[in-house]
Image (tube, rainbow, N blue to C red; front, side):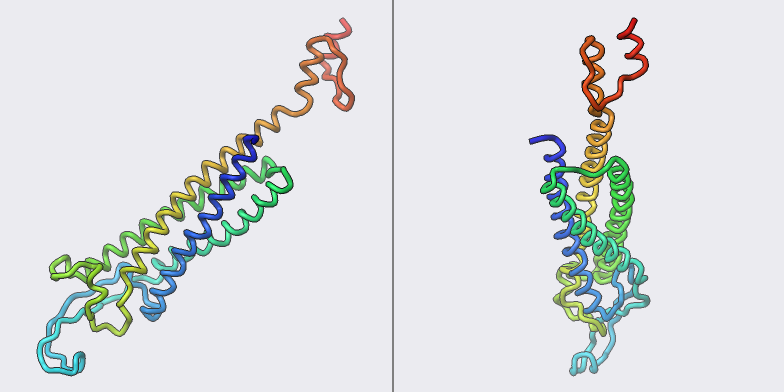
Length: 242
């Protein structure tokens, strides 16, 4: 198996994993957005209050409930969703191209390989930024929910505890942690994608440099007859007829 075919197979595998990982980012974030009625939980601020609110439970007595002062910026959730959607679309398109190249036994041009490297590096930085944003935003929301770890439950346990908000909080931790882990996996895949793209660029450049005329020039240096279809270089021509 030649080197370019091995690289194409590795690229096909990376693209397939990108599609799966991207879906594991988009779907949980979409479910969380639907449960939170379009609000973003990332970087939300609030506090716990204890008061007698019989309308919350239907029974008299003191009730501790979470008060959200300000929901997080929608761009924090949209950024991660955008990276996930782009990853799915790009992985599907490039995966199809890799299969086409494997079947046709050819590869990208030198310019196309160079553009692929640039695009992979750009999306790698975007994916890394989205991963940090999602991780920091989830940590901020968990700090609000647990009241700075002052509550007798963890952030994971809080999704099974009534927070008395006007949104569904029964699965927020599961959705956001799954999206967080998947997004970091997407970032790792984009790093692998960048390395593979660079290797394919290097391989294409090597093939471009070592064109079909180099073996014939070696024959000329050995005083053999040049093959047809490849012009004799001026410096070699003068050497032969001296």
